[in-house]
Amino acid sequence: MVPSLATAESDAEKLHLRSPGVRRALIQGFLGSSLVLFGSFGVGWLANAADINRWSWIIPLRTEPWGVSLTTVALTLGCWVMFHAWLLLGRALREADRKAWRPGSLRIVNIATAVWSVPHVFCLPIFSRDVYAYLNQGRLVLAGRDPYQEGVSQLDNWFHFGTDPMWAQSETPYGPMFLWIEAAVMWVTNNHVEAAVFLFRLACVAGVVLIMIYVPKLARHYGVHGGRAQWLACANPLFIISFISSAHNDALMMGFALAGIYAAATADRHWSRGVLAAVLVTVSVGMKIISLVLLPFIGLLWAAHLIAARPQLNPWIWRFAAWFATASIAGAILLVVGWINGYGLRWLMVLAGTGDTGKSFWSPLGIADDALTNTLHALGQDASWTLDTLRVIGRLASVLIVLVLMFFGRDRQIMSRMTLAFTALVVLSPIIHPWYLLWLLPLFAINGIRNDWQTKWVVFTVAFFLCYGAQDQLSVWEFLDLDEQMLQLSLVTSVLCMTLIALLPSSRWVWAGGWFAAPIYLRLPGLGRTYMLHTFDRIRLTSTPSGGTQTTTAPQTAEQLHTGALPATDAEQEVRR
Image (cartoon, rainbow, N blue to C red):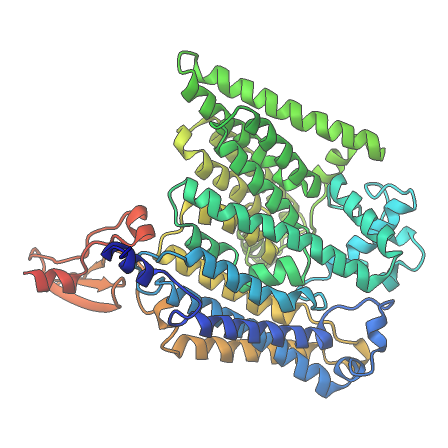
């Protein structure tokens, strides 16, 4: 049988590992990950009780100035090689050309993410040492203590297991189901540090797998290209480092949350999928309580299908019924969990009142606090109250926003409303850790991130947090007195890498065009001309006499930017004339 011409063209268009640019991106990303792996052995976090400390080839990397300097550069450089590989992959998949992504894109993104992730499975923890807190909290549970009432400092030898002393006397910020994972890991490994860290990392890899399964499924459900959503949310180096190298349990939280959202979004298949959605999101809450904000919107997604099936009833009857069912399922599960572990529901109250102290200089409330504090100090006034006050204001404002989004909006906008509600909780907090972006990015990718300034915002945000994480979380022995020098070395390495990446032809597309579909108009009084700054096809400035005919690029919809069905550029319009 002779294949049809359409089939042949489709096969020609389909992406393969041998497609231009793909293999280069895969190899470069793996090389970057390998550099990060090597760098982690010198400046990654190690517990005092870890056997790795006594490996002969590790000792000079951690105790000699040349070893610490070499691994600092390797770690930082590896992050930026991964970043450039991520951009190369996007370019190979037509992100740079703003054209429709070809068949097979999702498979390529999945393969790239898996290949780039392998070295990170074996890294020492970098960008954060929260995983060592998991070890001691697991020991605390096995010792019969209540982690919601006591800190890990109550344990013998807690410091040798690597927990940051800052949190030694704090209650755990994690849900009771994750405490079971912590206890199980420490029991299985018999308190062996390296084995425990590796098992926690594998648990987080399971969360990553869940995220990678459900991001493209949800994206397709909402009319967004699954491969592009996967590239934005899961292939970026911040995702791989934070959820695998750092072994943050946020991967499990988001994995179960996305699985629950998908079950609710497809509840039209069977009513039981609404029950499954409530169960899965409750498991997510059992990892970290922040995902509790998703439950009301799970109820709304469930209700939307019930309303469509039986429109004769008032929609609000179905919504309140779904909210009641969702709350009942979640409450019953949490009551059973509390009864089994003996914590009851008081952990909810403990976690509701627990939060990170301090502020991030990039958070909106952190910026506001700095401005207010500096103003008060300049006026000779006390400013000790500002941060706590802004924290309360932020919490009240976020609760109000969540309530408004729950009760107002169309059913087809529920996913967007859920995303904005989650965003409000994150943004209106004084402290925003880099991996908090990874709570939101999958949800925004599912809703659709336009290939204009929105995609650039994601790229630049990932770059900022890579730069910050690489220089902020370096484990350097105090006796070397090199902390400040390594911070500066990492920062200089990042600046040089960012400059080089910006100048490379393969990544100029990130900043050299594609910002806004419509030009920016500038009218200067007295000149009689209107200036137009074009930023989409390429950055250029044109002018016309005021009141004259203006040729512009037509505004683009999200659907056009997602699918590549773009309106004609100025140059194309001129050719057609």
